[in-house]
Image (cartoon, rainbow, N blue to C red):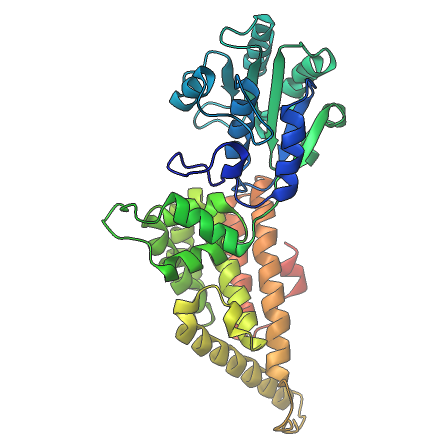
Length: 393
């Protein structure tokens, strides 16, 4: 998502905050007669759909400039109202993940009709929702483009597309934004607008969402636009920070039930877990200014201290079991042995969260994946060893 609020004083591509290289490319494409398909690639929440709509409006505009649509002509007015006769969107139905091949074929075959309001017809396609058959249907249109047709594709993962499709498009990358750009987008889109319970975003809220979103304006606006995230983050945090003290029964019952209840929001939960692990590493590295969850600083410090104590206790017990004498570490040592080991364990924990995300993307069993993740995070936090055979289950 980009800064495209109609309340903004900006017009056309100047509504896009940041992404100067991309805007320069767009300026050249809009004013040419090149009818090549444009492919926008970038992570979910990067603003592809908003940018795609700005491109579509510019292509349909009666008086476009290098800055995009004029926003004053008849075509632009129809586009703003959402009923432009020469613009269509091809996407999966609600609750579905794939666009039926028949729908792709029908929509593309209809493009032979000439435009009714201007000189072009534009269709926006979510390429992530095209299966191989749908992409092959699209390929025929790309191989024999009609002079009055412009196609705009969006994709979160270009590797999902057929090489033959990629070879026939102009690929533009939508990069993550800088943190100050995310703050600017939040202010333009949401500040001074009442939220569901009448609260207003504070400067601390804006800073948090800008950091948490990791360069994704769509994610920042989604989370900042409602109160549901606050409770989800609070519950996720409570589970993670108490894992070293939780019993395995807790993991199989209450914790697993929480994840199952919020299955549809699992990507956000994973993002919260990763932000907490990152903050723990920041505390170890003495870089508190980089912490995302600054409001949780006291709890994070307590947990970090407790985890180091767990590791020191486990190491001492292991030494006793082996009949060894552990020498006291030097007081002026920059890092204690527990700190060094905790850093390694936190890095492993972050990797496990990402592994779980990828496993669910491959449709691995949800409950099995979450149970495995919780068990390993508990072992890492409590100072226990992860059995290699169990880790690779």
